[in-house]
Image: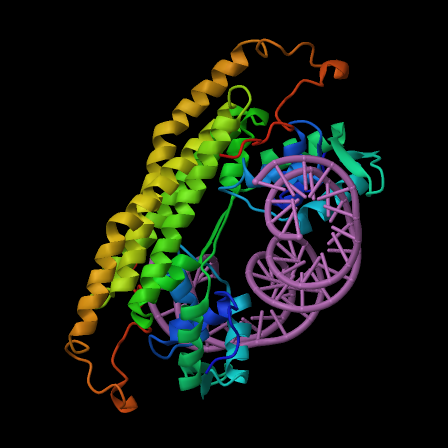
Length: 216
Length: 216
DNA sequence: ATGTTCATGTAAAACGTTACATGATTAA
DNA sequence: TTAATCATGTAACGTTTTACATGAACAT
């Protein structure tokens, strides 16, 4: 029925997925992204509203304008049969990918070039982020009306397990990282490295040319 | 010294970071993204080569063309003092963000609309993905020449802890998910839901209008 | 013979983020 | 009266992905 093979799980497709749970306005779709999808796919109004408009153009959803005195119409979106088919198809054909961009880890990777205070700050922010995520997941569960479905249940527990492990690691190893960095800074730059003002001594194998050469 | 406040940790900045470890070609920078950065920031040639060119234009890196018979020059990039300053500045001012796009979880969230075989496939792919990630991390550690720095050490262990937890969860709860879905499909759609061909009965509170209304 | 690694780049398209622009209602 | 919630959208911008285009060296 549906044409395209693997369009990926973009915001457009996710909106369709939200609407399989029932009708909703763009604003309500956003709530979904902030609660149920919080730990695996964020999206802002800037991508949701255009996505819904596109879906309406393509006949995958219908729009019903609800008049409200003064203000622009409130628009209620509802998925069509074609929309459900398209979504089912997307579920069946999408090759799942995982994309992570963690600026926390980028920063901590280069901890040697940061002040200790900054490293401590970053660790705190990272811990706060994970606590917030766990909070969202817990509140989402409490606020649910009726039992949570099997699929959502899995993703919820998965999120808790992973973010829990992440938080535990930061709390356990964070202080150790700070101590290790502090020790390194007390001592002279360690054996091998000479003057830091002399660029001619800078040719040591620092690691850039040290990649995996082995193949098992 | 550096002008811009929070440009974010884009590929451009990451390349600069790689070059603080020593000179490298674009190809070698890519290796970095595939090994050391594998678990927190991927990038392809299509973003790395242009990024290096931009950095060269801005004077943050220098380029040395190494002639090779026939083929186009091999270009060795080296960070400049301005480049190091810019990178240090980026480390100090970037507000760390975390972006996750997990199509695995999107798919599993909507497990009710997939065949059991497909769900099983997705679970297997997810497990395979985490094993591969753990592999990369382990191989990266073994292949290292000399001890791994304190910062990289932290991110490496963090990756192992998190991916390990994720893998464990999929392996533990994956079969349970499949069983639960199988049970649901044996039985009639459960109490409350009536005929599936009648749209007039479709107005039950399925969840779309059931968001967190509470505020603690 | 065939495939992988090394090695570089461009151009176009897709996608998402941010900032802008507006405005009523309700709770503190 | 101040802030938050509800509610919608557009335009510009920036980033990333994908596809294209080339070619030698080396291992199987």
